[in-house]
Each structure stands twice: as structure tokens, then as C-alpha cells.
Image (cartoon, rainbow, N blue to C red; front, side, top):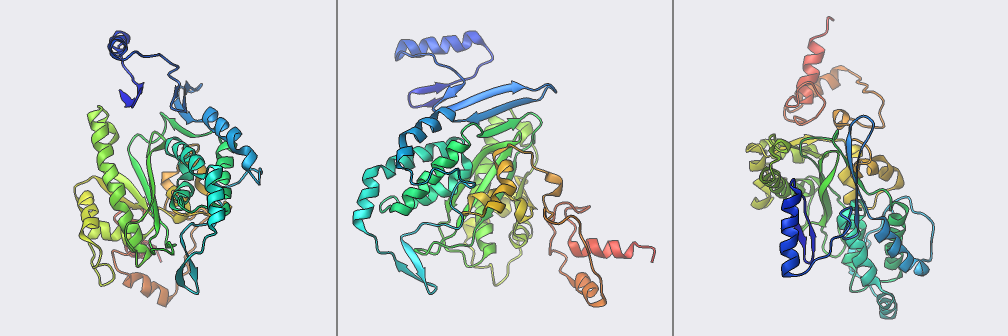
Amino acid sequence: MIIHTDDVDGYTTSHQFGLDIANLFDKEWGIRMCDPSQMLGVRRDRWTDDEGVEHLKLSMPSYVDDLYQKWKSYMSDTTEPNTAFPPGQQNSFHEWVDKLSYERNFDMDEVKRVQDRGFLSVTGSLLWAGRCVFLETSYGINQLCKIMSKPVEKNWDQAMHILRWMYKNKDQGIEYSSQGNQKLTAFYDSSFNPDPKDSKCHYGWVIYLCGGPIAWGSHKHNHVSPAVMHAEYCTVRPLGDCIIWMRKLCTELGFSEFCDEPVPTHGDNDMATGLIRENRHTPANRMILREFHLVQQYCRDGYIDPLRVNTKRNPSDLLTKAVTEVDWNRTIDELRGLSPIDYVTLASDPDSASLSIELSPSSLLAVKDCPPSFANAVKGLPDTEMSISRFMYNLLNSSDD
């Protein structure tokens, strides 16, 4: 049973047991039974296809349609966007000028005009839809929330852009399938595009089960990251915390089979993955705060299994920045569970049809001299614990020539 203040959502295997609970609630407070396919704006559709595969779809068509009708007269542009947020845009109270950060000058008359038009109201409405179904809008909505106290016309256009995206996709949402992954699986990423105000970057993560996302996050780091590896490594901590919680939740609900193995945790930075697995401390990473090293214990204790994903195949990338249309189209359907994730080819480049290796005495020496731990988490090799250098060495020395 889930209670949202004055809305109750429940499931029971006994019809009489459900009626008994409902009667007790009705006697105490008075209740009204409603359509179970709708809850707080979210429509839930279940069906079984011709092959016996069960499906569940979460969408918000009525909610989004009402929201669009309310604000469409305030839209300066009514074209259908191809991304959830304008590519390359980031909001901040500061701006970069010759690589230095300066506080922006705001026209307070413009700010008041945008606020009076209803910027806070529309942002709050978008936030609810983003939290329930439209996870791909998480980064964009986060950018709106950063500028709540001083929004300008550009920010209003961004809000309308997100609303038009939701309206365009109001009948899609998130989908799950009984053929989807039956074990918890996670992806994470971090941008390295710092906010001019405080130099903090944005990160995102998503956890999948039954082919669709069941938990996700898109936030700004609470610390400055001096390098990409640092930003990505520190992203695993909040993701790992959520994985621990999800494992406990599944177990308490009687679904321990979903989490009886280390959760594959996919990232696209090999240095961060290696640090989690091997605790390799160097002058470049020894300043990382101790709280973030808890992920190494998560790995040792068998809660997470850090693996590599090619950056072009990482769906969580869409939660970290305003990407181009090309990058958006590459993983948006996988992010929402509308297309299955190909876990076999996650580590490969989707734009490369095959792997071509050119050998020479110098390159061969470089391969053999490569540190054994260079890519020990590369998925797709014959042994996931095998480094590229060892794999290549074995391959070369096993030939008949």
C-alpha cells in the first residue's frame, strides 16, 4: 500500500482483504473509490501481447494535455522540439567571460514580468511530470529550478520547450516488459561542464528493472571536480546508495531474485571504474574525500559490479547535459524503456562496424607494456577481468604464425 497524503494506492491478492481495509478507511475518514488505472496524473496500462509477454506502460496524457492547453497561448514558438531541452544550454546566475566567472546583470523588470506570467507555477507542474514519467526532462527541469528567483524570457522559452516536448510525447512515457532484465542494472555519467557560479558539474544515473527505469537522479555535484574521472567516480556514491536501498526494498517485498547478484553498474570512464575495483591511489586522485570511497566497499561486498559502457551507448548521458539531437536520438528510447538495451555490445562504439587493429613493432611493444589494469572492466571481452593488453597478448601469441 502506498499513501500519498490523501490518495491511497494498493494491491492485494485477496479481494476481501482489500475491501476490509477500504471499509476501515471509509469509516475513519470517508473515501471515494476511483479508476485504478489513474493515480495522481499517471496512467497505468497493462496488457499481454500475442506471445504471452506482459507489458506495463506509465504515461500522463491527460495531465500533459491540460498543462499544454493552459500555457499554449504564452508560447512564442509552437514547433515540435526534437530534444527535451535546447542543446548546449545551461542556466546560471553567473557567466564566463574570457574564462573568468562574472555575476550576470539582470533586468528586474523582465524578471518580474516572467514571474508574474507564472514561471514558478509552470516549472512546478513540469517538475511533477518529470519525476513521475518524463525522466528525460530531468536535466532541463533542474536548469529551470536553478534560476527560479530570477527567470528571464530565455528561461520562459526553455520551460515552454520542455512542455512542447512532453505534449509531443504525451502518449509514450515509460514501458516495462516481462522479457526485460530480471536483475537490477544501473548506468551513471557526469558532465564536465561546470556551472560558472560555483564550478560544480552535473551528474545523472538510472536504474533499470524489467526493461524500464525504476529510479533515476539528475543533480549538480555538491563539490568541485578537478577532472572528469573525479566527477564520474563521485557520481557512483549516490547511485550506490540508491542501489543498496533498492536491494533492500526488493528483498522486503519478496522479490530477492531481482537482486541476488552484484548489480551491474555501467560507467564510461575507465579510470573511475578501475579506482572502484582496484583502489588504485595516485597523486591525481588521493585528494578524493573519504565519503566517496564507500563505493569500493559496495564493490567488495558484492552490492555493485562496475562495468564499462561506451559513452555513445550510455543512456544516463541524457541526464547530465543538453546534448545534440544526434546524441539524443541515439539513446532516448533506451532511457525510457521503449527499446531494449543491447547489453552484449555496450562497450563497443555504435558508429564502428568492426574493430580494426594495425600492428607494428612499436605499437605491439606499447600493447605489451600497457599496465595490466588498463581496462580490466571492459565488457565484451572473453573474460571481463582480463585487460586489453593481456587479451591482445594472448590473441597474438595463439596464432599459427
